Length: 169
Length: 376
Image 1: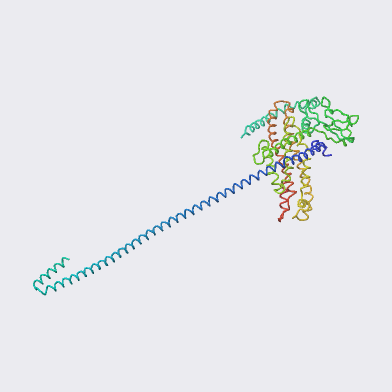
Image 2 (image 1 turned 180 degrees about the vertical axis):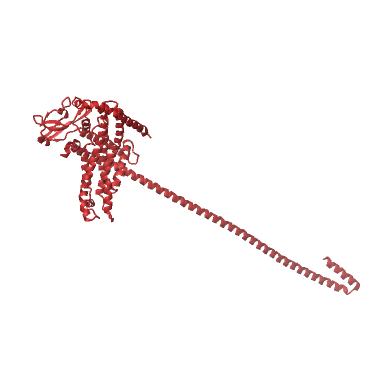
């Protein structure tokens, strides 16, 4: 037979048998006690690493989102502060302006009132002066009229005297 | 960078070899005249015989000089099992002698045969003799199995001890990259993510068994030295296992592509069917021969180079032979890994082909043909 030519290519039944036994035995034992647990452990670890990485990524994203949020909040706060300050400034300015206006108007009112009072008092004083002058005139006239009747020259000096007296008043 | 000195040494050896050759031929001419005469002499050197002796299986394990380990001979005869030590088959000069068990046994060219009273081989009776002996190869195979069990079970046990979250240590860190290599480079791309896990134990066992035996075969001293993975029986067994696994994992799509290639003219289908059918058997046979031939060739090469010393009958031949042997040994280390890888890779590929789901595109034939090209 062709195979008999070279002993190297003629398989021995003994080795075939023992090799089958060895290989199948090895496959069963290693498959059950080595490869399965080993592959499972490796894939578990890989899964763990993957999960951890995913978690880390998620956390990173979360932190970034938080930072963004914080920044947005800060920006908003800053804006609000600026608005507040602006508003306060405006309000204070307005208040000052209002106060000034009010003060001015008050002052004007007071001045006006004072003038009115002054005018009134002046008028009252004038009226009183007029009244006094009137009564003085009436008095003088009464006295003149009483004297006139007795002495003409004396009458004239007296009038003159009276007149001087009025002036003194 | 480290290869530079080796390269220059090799170049030197080559030139020396070429320079010395004519002198050797001249020197051997007068010797040739007496060659026939010398051949009959005691202790004459036969290269082919020496090399084949090292390559072939044996009933005893030669250690050194005249020391060898006797291995058990287990014979299944028509009268039942016959078990005895192999040292009973040889005398003190290592010449085969007749051993009387249930039959009369004698070693003829290293194989146990039944002989008749006159000491001649009884061909008819020998055909009924089944030799299940623990030969050198079987013993070496068992050693490799023990090594594998120890190493791999220890490595696997480490996962239980240290848990899955810690980084691998020691043996574990040696094994894990190889396991990952088999998974990521061999199983996943060839079988696909859906089905690869089922075949992982098979592929890993094949890979490590071949790898261990390849390396053991390269060690010239005791625990190694047997040529297991370069033995056709070993590669045949593995190839048969692959054949069975491939066919068990085959689906309808696979057989359709073999017997009635879709997308072809009917005449082409008829033409392709027998070729594809041969391919079914061809694949495991190619696996068997590839591993056997590669490992055996490597061993023969190394032995031939060593034999140069004995052919030239001068110790100076070692100056040429030894660097070459070292060089070939380096290549053999690569081949040991490479052949384990190729065997496993092709196994995965065949399993992947057999279990591939049908394509629903318009040119399945073209793709099938491409695949075939890649595979052969």
